[in-house]
Structure formats: structure tokens, C-alpha cells
Image (cartoon, rainbow, N blue to C red):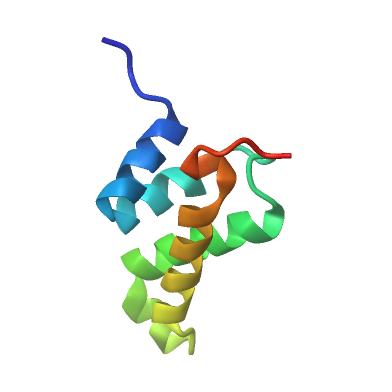
Length: 85
């Protein structure tokens, strides 16, 4: 049995609705998979899930950051399995 690739792990987490796992794995992707803006949004979404109180104290809309990251990740062609142009 072979280990699943990170992309496959993210697809499975997205399919299950496991935001924390999907965002954590995606946040560790090497540069080039996502644009810099996408990478920042994904990392911020994960950090808001993990350190929500801290981000709230800094005036960040935690729920909006998580929702943005999740929507971005769950609709990217590279993640949902569509070929990209």
C-alpha cells in the first residue's frame, strides 16, 4: 500500500469537510502550487482555526478568513481534480 500524496490527502479532507486537516496540509505546500495570495489566505485560514482567539484580539474576522480559505481550497481545480489550463 502506498502513501497518499498531499493533494490526495487534501481531496479526501475536503470531501469529508475536514477544514483543519485540509488547510493544514495545503498551507505546507511548496511555492508554485498556489499563487502567493492563495497561499497566504490558506495559511491565515488554518491559523484562524487553530489560534482563533488571538486573531480575534488582533481585530481579524476569523470566520470570514476561515470561510475564504475553505472556499478557495475547495474550488481550486488542482484540488478538486480538474485539469488546469
